[in-house]
Image 1 (cartoon, rainbow, N blue to C red):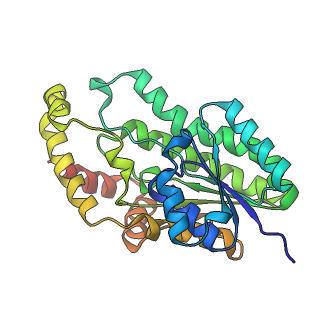
Image 2 (cartoon, rainbow, N blue to C red):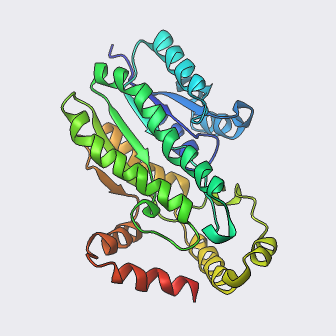
Length: 281
């Protein structure tokens, strides 16, 4: 009997991470579903039970900004399963605001979670993935390609992740490890709700940027009303894990492909500025 492959996912308490954990388990993988706070595993475990895959999912603690938890989690996985075949970097945190009204420390926090957390987890997993000739799949965002108003810190971190992974991919390939990034657009998940934004307070604090912020918030609320479901956004993750060597850059919807394509064909930046400038007027 073939030993099931083992995948470790970060940020699985809700949204895309939760859906991806259930989907990988349904695809036959032994799924290590990690999260910073394992008391928030109830939704994942309930979904796993509903889909009949509770026996294939293990919940473990891993905080991407705490290197000791990364090492401890990987040690447990190898001790219990003997191998790691894939890593899915999904954990992240949104941040809304503009730099004059925020602080440099806010930017550092966004980079720590969204960029350095990915770097640290990938670095720790790579020796095991070399041994298994496995894969690193990282959930970025269309915001890792197109800079978006009032998302300066978040987009900067996601741009950094894409640059890191695009640079790593050919090097990792020489030792048998495939690297890919998954770029969702708007996803109807708790990711935005978890920001806990007080819109009125945000607008009051925005000073001269309040009219632009109000326009941006109105546009964003509309876009999330037409968002993908987490399961729809997670499906390409499973395809990237289970298919032949995946493409490096994978969008999760036709809209995301068109949006990213605007940037990739925009040598002087004018098309993107015209597009995103309309969001704040």
